[in-house]
Length: 280
Image (tube, rainbow, N blue to C red; front, side, top):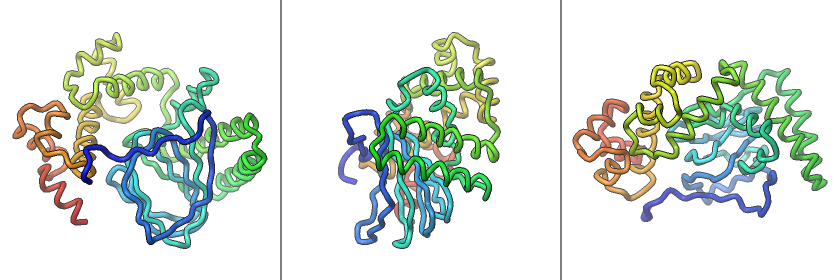
């Protein structure tokens, strides 16, 4: 890319609402990797190809759901025969009440680092398909309030189906963990001090690590490092920034130290990763 930023697709409607469309594939125009300032749920009824989300390629298999969280970088490469739905909605859709925001925060499949694919069991798929029919009808009829609450119920049902493959955290821990996630977003990739982040949340590092391990099986520092590595990968591959610039944005003044850090987590140097990824 010639510019310094990853392309951002912005929510196009003037109000917080759900938009939907059928999947249409035109192989003449390959999709460029991009990120959203909104959330997306893709339902693939049938098809082939792949869907790359943050450097991981997932197969497009029939009767599967793909989740793209706000800010995640993705690119689809579906076969022409692929059919299904794409639902798009902004974070503001959940601003009606605290309960709605709690629902959004509980949707683990939208989180960076989470498995973004759900292949429901036949019984769950039947229930989800019935709900999808109702959501489609309400959207087609332009019944804004009805479609919103049907869609929120649909997301809750997806969460329930997803929980069969992932252990879900308790609501209390989720609230504290979400505070940590928000804190590391605010401090940016250059943050290195977990003690300062824990202090800003008015808790000890030991408590913070307990929360993070309960949610993810990883310590707060491990999650911070994962965020840095992912941010570095995105800049190396999707922007024209030099390794020195990437190093500084990730909080490393010493480029050699950044190189060692990156290689420790990826088994490749930044230049090797950039070259290998673009070759593939």
